[in-house]
Length: 184
Image 1 (cartoon, rainbow, N blue to C red):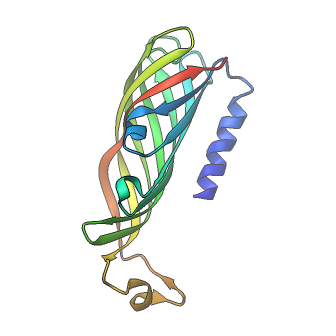
Image 2: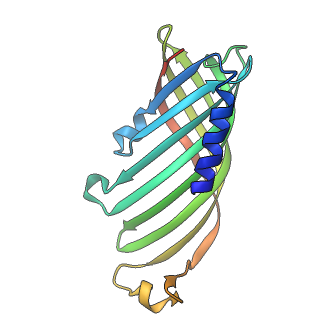
């Protein structure tokens, strides 16, 4: 996870030298679901931009849950100008989670890639609303067990409990409404 974050930050930092516009954003749908998010987007060409969003939560709604993740994305805008109107994007997803749901524990990590489609509605010179939805393939590797199990003791090899579930699944990678503020 740290290597993915470092690579994404390095890509964003290398693009800032050419960037014409820089924007910060938050996904209001994720925020409403008690999973705070913050993102940034940098213009790297006449029709393209790159972005990075970070999100996470810790025990929302009193549920035992912890999620931390990041989503890098490259976008192509059809209108001829970045951060304006229709776009398609290619994005990644990396997340670590520990969720207890209906008596079952899911503790693991996920990584994936997908396509995002969206529309950016400019409200003013510096303020935009970004509607987006995406679908992708996610690989997950997790420890999956019931709360009453002694999984960390019974299924440990050495001193570490091993993952017992992994696979690929087709899931939404991005669904949201973001509010963006253009800094420059």
